Image (cartoon, rainbow, N blue to C red; front, side, top):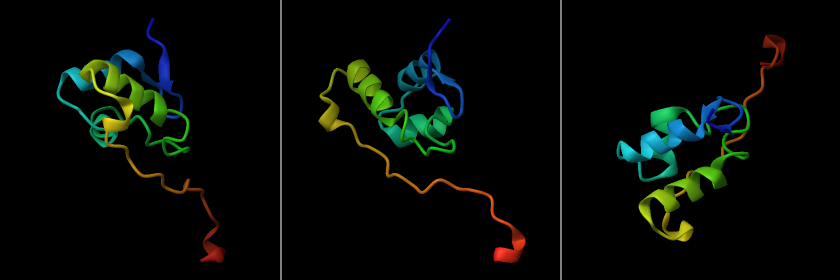
Length: 82
């Protein structure tokens, strides 16, 4: 059983590794392949782990990996607020 890296989207370590093997070289590319980092926390929980996984697979330093930007979490609001 593969461990879950992105809890919000339930993306496993194996899914992220497969995305990297399929050509993803940045956090944004991994996000597009797997949805890791697209949940409620917008990658605040998993982004560093994804960066380390990319660096390990590509045999690069973590500082070389292009990161994604943080976005504010989206929360539902009532229509009357608008």
